[in-house]
Amino acid sequence: MSDDKEVKEIQQKMQECIVGMRRLAPLVGVARQVKEFSSDQRKNALAAEQIKFIQRGESVAASEGLARSSPVFLEKFKALETAYAEACGTIAEWEATFARFDACRSMLAMIRSDAFAAATNT
Image (cartoon, rainbow, N blue to C red; front, side, top):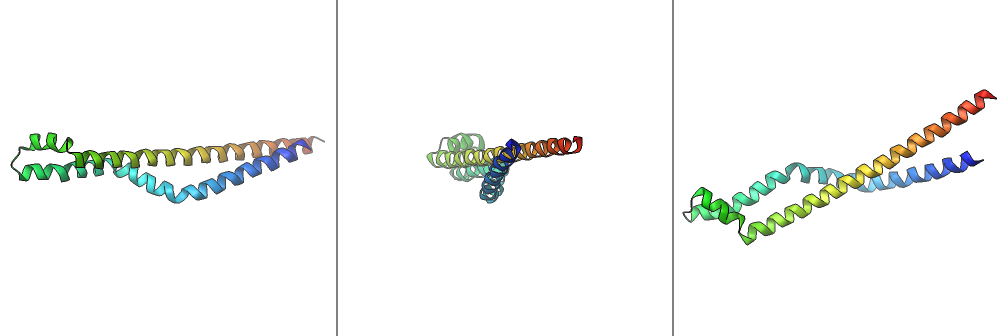
């Protein structure tokens, strides 16, 4: 029966999705945290550099410009942006895997519904 083969294929795809979601679950929590606090981390990195210039006697406006051009800040900023990009990738992978799982679940429900309808019509 063709439906039986389809059901097994869909169930196999669902199992693959479940394995993927289990692998991603702990990473998604961290990724969401990285995304949520990314702005704060960038501000903190800037402030850490800016305070050095303020302590030297620079004005707040001048110290911000100097801090933004500081190699230390640029390195921290680049690391934060890399972490943010990785977090977005992890979340996108999670959402794609979940969408695939949901699509398989819907297809399985349709096949079962069709099978039930065919069984009740005979």
